[in-house]
Length: 72
Image (tube, rainbow, N blue to C red; front, side, top):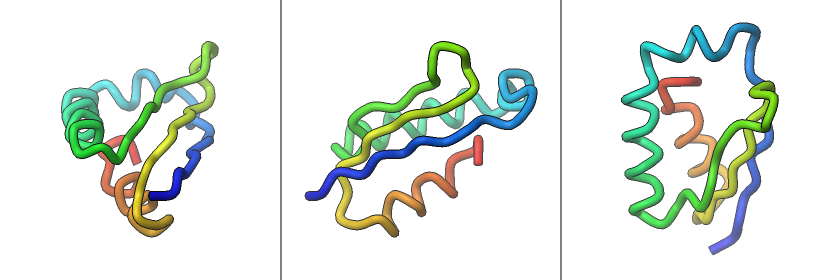
């Protein structure tokens, strides 16, 4: 399957805003990794950007996963 790269910016005060959704977010990422779709994902050192690599059937699948994430 093709690889897809995610690179995005966090909103202002992202660390505080995402706290209530963290557990659901992490559980979703774990499921994606176990399914072999998510290779890696995480924030940049300064916590202003996010970087991820997906191994998915198509870009639409990656978009669906991202938009269904509680942090979206």
